[in-house]
Each structure stands twice: as structure tokens, then as C-alpha cells.
Amino acid sequence: MAGVTSLGVGSGLDLESIVTGLMKIERQPLDRLERKEALINAQVSAYGSLKSKLSDFQTAMSALSQASSFKQFQATSQNESIYTASATSDAAIGSYNIEVTSLATRDKLASTAFADSSAVVGEGTLTISVGSESFDVAIDSSNSTLAGIRTAINNSTENTGVTASIITDDAGSRLVLTSDETGTENTVSVAVSGDSDGNNTDTTGLSAFVYSAGGTQNLSSITSATDAVVEIDGFTVTSASNTLTNAIDGVTLDLKEVGSSTLTITRDDEAIIESVNEFASAYNALMTEIGTQRKGQLEADSSLLAIERQVRDVLNSGASITGSSMSYLIQAGVSVDKNGKMNVDEDAVGKLLDTDFNSFVNMFSAEGEGFANRLNTLADGWLQTDGLIDSKEKGLDSRLNANLDAQTRSEARLVSVESRLRAQYSAMDTLVSSLQSQGNYLISQLNSLNNNN
View: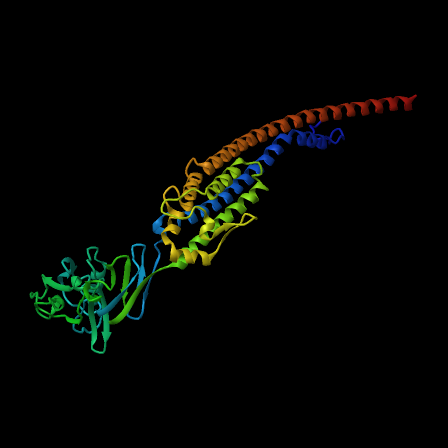
């Protein structure tokens, strides 16, 4: 008889359900592996969240872990239309009388008017100097128009700091050369060699662009390069730029126009208080995260207890700190309430900044002793390569890879088991079907004999 093509078709038995039920039992180890995979992935995600909070905590601790972090200053110009100012940690409290007597300007030269930008000028070599540096631009039939010369100058890989443009007015089109930087050290001059008209200095051909401050001037000066001149408390400062960075330690001046204005440098207490608030916020966020993970995927993880204990050991140490009259954060207006939340008394912090600034600074930043300094060291250890968090993540990755390998082997085994079961039950189905056919044939023959009798 023909072979059975679907389990149970030949015998009439529900063999497909039997195989499905057996495979469900065989699959139980794989189901356990998949549940374990989901758990490991949840722990990986939990450690990612914890790592993020630890990184925020480290950033906040780092902001107060060095004395230089507290050297935050504001630079205020009485008239910002004359100049604006900014200060770094190298600045010092004080005030200055500043008079801007002149601004730094760029050198700008213009040619005589040509019919339009497509007018042919001539061929040869332009040598353009910007201060003490120069570069050559070859002009031939491919770029001898006014527009071609402009493009050749701008596209030169050797360009030392000049930009060419074309201005078209009622008289025609003019080539304009402008130094990229301000100051007398960036003056522009132009020389020509190999002019196609045979004369390197006349006003025709390429030599129409010749210009030297002390010589031939076939170009017109629109503006001359000048230096900025500033009087600071009566002392003269000259600069090629309108941005002064070295005139006053830690202060940058951006000059806007000529005039006088008083500069005041003050300590930025608001920025310091903001850093202290960020210190408290990062602590609270970390403790909240630890509490959340303790109730969740990292319930039995000892790392949470280790981190929490190390942080609280620092906060509760009460040891003397070099350069500070304070030993506890609460003395600086920073306290932890009965619910474990850290709070900052901004008024108390502000008063300490005015009355005992150095003690306040050292309480946070003293090397190996200050609260922020010690906590920053802890955070570095947690987050460094092969540190607490990295080791945990590597362990989870290893477990996950082993789990996935086991799943692959289990899935391969299930394919083999199902194939074997189907082969066995298919053979049984065929056998039963054959026996049923033979039985039916015998019954038919017996019935036929009975009918004949």
C-alpha cells in the first residue's frame, strides 16, 4: 500500500498530538534556559541603569573634588557694547578701568573696475603676501578672467590667509582682497611676475593687481590693517586681535567698539552653590537607584550593599580635614534627613563662602580627606576597567553567552528528537494501517464464506 504521509492518517490514531505532547516535555530544559536568559538580560539592564547613576554621581563628585573647582568667577563689563568679558579659574577678584582706544581691523584692497566678472585680465603669476608669509597663484588662459582669478586665489592650497571676492557697482566689477585675520601683522601685498603684456608693474594686464604699502599701488586700500589698542588701568596693551586673552590673568576680553568701561571680577557663588546642589542630587539619585534595584532584579546582589556602605562610611567619618575647621557636611549646610535624603541649606552655604571660604573648599576637595575628593575616588574605582561594575557586567555577559550556547545545543537536540519520534510513529502508523487492512480483508473473506453457505 502507499506510504503514510501524515501521522495518524493510516491508523486513524491522533499521533500528531502524541508527538506534540512528547516534544513539549522534551522542550522543558530549553524553556528553563530561555527564562534564565530573560533574567540575565534584566540584570544586565539593571546594571546599565546603576552604572548610569554612578557615572552621574562621579561627575558631581569630580566637580567639587579639587580646590580649583571652587575658583569660579564672573567677569562683568559696565558697558557690554564696548567689550564683553569672561573669566576662568585663574582669575582674581578685583576691578579694572579699561579704555578701548582702537579696534583691530583687516587689510582690504580693491582693484579698478572691469567690465564684468568674465572680463579677461591677463596671464602670469601672482605672489600674494600676508604679513611675512606668501604664496604664488599661476594664472593662464584657463583662469585669466576676473572670476577665474578670484577662484584661483581662494582655492589655492598654499593660501596663507587672504580671501578674494568680487564687488560689482555702477562702474563695473572689482576684485577685492581681504586678509582673514586682523592686525598689522596681516597686511596684504601683491607682486606679479611673467605678466603676459610684458610689464609687471603697469596698470594693465595682471599687474593691475600689484600693491605694496611702500611702493607701487595699483590697488586701492579700502581699510588698512590696524592693531587693537587698550588701556588697562593706564597700561597700554596692543593686540592683533579684538580678543584679548593674556592682558589680565584668567580673563578674556572681546572688544566691540571704542570707549571706556569698568571691568569687575567677582566670585560666582551661585555656580558653587549649584555644584553643591548637584552633589546632593547625585547622592539622592544613587541611593534611590540602589533602593529600586534592591527591590528588583538585583535583590540579592552584594554590590549594592558594598556601594551603599562605602558611601555612608565616607559621609559619617567625621575625621579632621586639612585646611578646614569642619569635619561633617552638616557644618557646611549639607545634611541627610531621617528618610536618607540629602538636603542643602543654600543660605548657610552662602554665608560660609563669605566667612570661611577656604574651610568650605577644603572640606570638599582636600586631597584624600575632602568628602567629594574621597567619593570621587570611590566612583572611579567602581567604574574603572575591571572595577566593581565592569566585573559584574563581564560576569553577566559570560553567563549570557553560556546560556545562548546551551540553547543552541538544546534546539539542535529537539530537532533530532522530533525527527526520531516522527520516524518511529510514522512507521507504527504504517504498520497499524497495514494490519487494519489485512484484518478488514480477512473479515471480508469470512463474511463471503458465510454468505455462500
